[in-house]
Image (cartoon, rainbow, N blue to C red; front, side):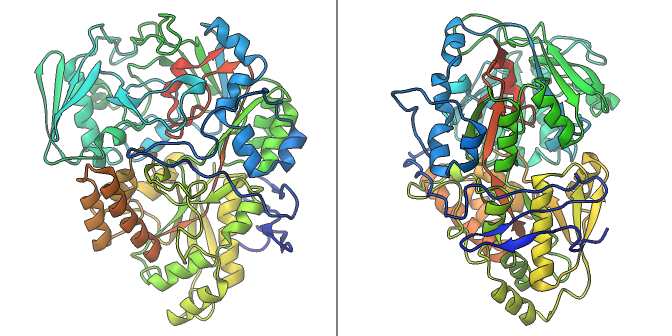
Length: 633
């Protein structure tokens, strides 16, 4: 499929803000014509609030550090949001302000209600192969599995930046020394879901051992366990993991929500990809790609209410229904009719949020910074000419006007993307995630220098041939607008012809991008795998020996730094090494970064414990194990 000016229309410059007024997307599998307008007029947006100074450990939500005192806020209206500057959003849409909203206080005083169904929308068939190359996508089924570790979540009002790692399926854990980690099983029995071939049997310490060993062998999760030397079970309640050397990354990295523990029977009979069977709070009971997916309460779930001291067994909800709503118009209609409990939350423009608020004036809305686990990018095959030449890679990046995309496509509510955990670094004087200046000269929009770089590499116009950009049919709306705008910049500024190659579904998309060696020739739309420790972005995604390096990066300096940082237990020292690695990655421009949208959760006022944490998106997507604590008034 060829990309031409018929795909991207209406780009023009404004006096003080370069903006993409719109992006028309047509063709197979991509949403029809979609316009994205600028919000807030032509003036510059006020500067964001500064991030509070970090402690020795990763901490802190940027913007308002605590809930404001005094008068409760007025519910946000669509007209107000359309012109609201960022500085006001940081204050008025902080999750901590939920406690002041009318109706929230009264419902919380009564405590959580047991029962009810959470309704959400699905736009793609589910994938269940937890151990396969598409592991990122299997997290789109809510709460069916447990893992070794998770993070502590205190509901709607829990600290946004808290990173306390706690045991999930086991009772607890302890590092008895720098290389020995011990887990203890719970005293109460734990059961697998009652579905063939596991048939509801009791979970044992051997299951725990098998599950960890399976993750160690898996292509996506394997890098987290690369330093594991032995896994033993000295008794029926104890699992001991011994490492070859110190692994500073392990606790946070192994708590990511695709480190699911699976049953041996499912792996051996090949049913892992067909049905989700775990020990989690919800059981999968229906899965019809064109109709929907349904999960019901696990009556034998082992956890109890950790927030309200009610002693109630989790989960609070009876069921979770995922409706198959394959296009934006159908989804919007369902939201307006109250048939789903939350609106779009990620990769949405200011205009999208305004429309959601107009459809449901009583909706509750909060905003959080872009999660470090979702920085969209375009992977580049740096082993294929002409991308073997760093000048070509830098030129492609410098031809992209990211500020125009932030202001035009996102209406100002986005930031330049870069895949690293910004919360890990002490950057007290910097606003939200990473600034253009921090990300270096090759992130800056400089078409004159981009042309000079291409000429120095031997290209006077274009690259001598059309280049391929791999896409997913499910990538539509603002996502598609970003990718297509980047391609339009390459054509307009550098004369590069771009051919779009469409994957028919998510599994095919994952196969082309994440298979060993990769199957894409030139460029491919990508998303870094969800990660909760900087090592996942350092060693996991960039080291030449990592099975999760889908970007074909093979750089001796990056290999050296990525291996060095994972041994360093001192946080400040580790930060310095990680910064050196980031500088090398950005200098060589191995990946092409776009923009990352600030995240909004727009939900029914009767839905609770649905606010976000920077480690997890609590909408059914990934990180949704915390839906075991969601409830409806």
